[in-house]
Image (tube, rainbow, N blue to C red):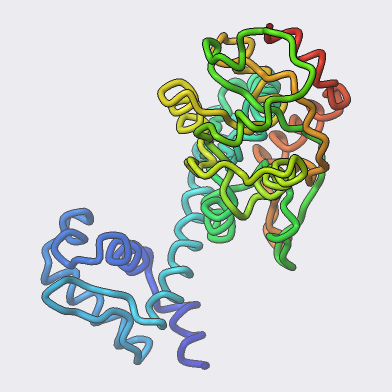
Length: 327
């Protein structure tokens, strides 16, 4: 272990780390060499040098390309983390030198994007217009690994209890109800009065639903079971706003979205919210960060803006109020 410690602390150089990440990304010596603007023999020699330092095989070579060994996967994770910290520090120094306030990388679930994240970015830009905000949309399965290797500073998401971990710090900010939306010209959005919600019609429709792990998906299925109906079987699973909007309009699908997303779609004329109460309790929306990583000034400022937006957010709105707005 002392040899590995010495290699990680002293022997590895940035060029070694960049080479390892490129090999993991392209899984081919030639394509990695092209990306790094080096010759293939030079990359092969550099890899052999690193493997000699560790005394371990980090990649297997074959006619199909290169694959990381279990040792290689661990070293590549280390390389990505170091390179992310390097890039963050470089950008901070450059921002200070240019008079800007820095850069913050934010991961966001759709539930947080139109209301909380958009409002926080707007506030941040009023305070510091030169702060660069890098936004990535996705679900926790995609965003958490990027947070852990340092490619994201903070995630704004629904705080799913199944993803709690000792290395993660969570800060609840606001409750967010769910709504069912359809495209504006859908028959269910025609505005005719109903005594009962059209659950049977909804069960037979195409849907865009949250991924299976999401608590909102589980709760939606339970709503159908409560009506003695099987959940819809014609489904597309996605946590993407664009995917949801595309199939909402293209296939006439129904979608299960957060209240602030529904309000945005209604306001822009992209959808109508059905006058159906969705009486479910879901985890709050909030901030996810790594406990052992000190936030940059730009990240701290962005999170402070998130708290301000959440504090100004009205309590969960009644379904009828949104239904009237969408009529």
